[in-house]
Length: 410
Ligand code: ASP
Ligand code: MG
Image 1 (cartoon, rainbow, N blue to C red):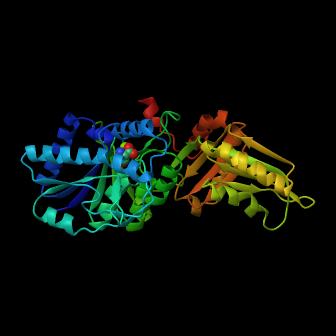
Image 2: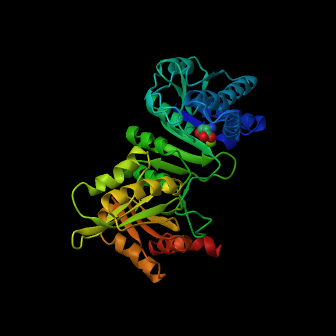
Image 3: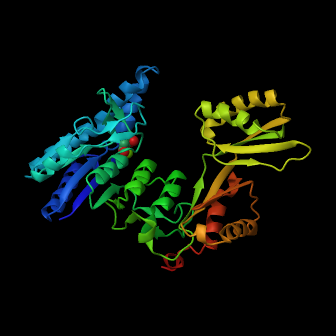
């Protein structure tokens, strides 16, 4: 007997018909002598609909009320699915985040999980019920409803799998898992059957929209085996597992393209202790995330500093940096948002010298200029001009032998 956590995303529960199919499938898993815990997202686009409603009321709504509203999408879906299971002769019980309780801190709209007692759920399972959990939500110590951030039901599912020590966690969604690159950009991209947690974290963080990043972090921390599969189309799936379990011989697992990037350069700033701090701390205070940072070698006591931020923060960041630039007597501030970040991701990077060189070679062969570079154990990233982004993905994908030749000739 296995204990399985199954999470169904919004598209899998978009209508009562969809919910019926989910119920059949959950019932049949249970009849195969498994214990099944279900986590649901809100039906279809419900969360967006609720967000539109609140936007029409007042821009000053507090986080507490926003979360109280948004959490209802998942609650409705959980109760409907539990009813549907009952109508099929199954024993089922729905739980909201507060009923579990899934305890969180009080940072509304991006709350973090503090505790998840399992006693109630274990009892429910032992009594032969299928628990149906409203995902995406929790409750603070003083009883306010919180949510875990958009896409947060994935995180609910992984947290439950960790707390209940489930055998594995299945995420049903509308994509069939992970590809070596976005197939819309790179027609030769291949489907990935297994990927290690740190690779998935890099890919999720870099914009491969398959899983909530926090869900992958939790899965890695508690070694939860995760599988992503489509509920309706096809039988491809991607397992997200530990590095040791991937056991394949490859260096690079995938190539990603991040478009939400812009950069700011400060030209000719004095090269003395405390300058980087002076420049970057106003951004930190404004909760603007800085990604790559480059400082040039200094000449005659002066240097240049360039950093990247997301496009959405460019306006605010430029304002703040213009103020700092005056204070420290920088010669000029330059801002650009016609750039993208292309990254090669893989657990083979740390043990294979020459990976970066191979990536740079493939870009130079296409006459693509690299503006910034950053590397980590699992990733090499280059900032390049936006118009070359897609070409660069195909070139790097090819250079690391990721192209699927067969698929093309078929
Ligand atoms: N319904 C929420 C959202 O769309 C949470 C989720 O689907 O995981 O963001
Ligand atoms: Mg969703």
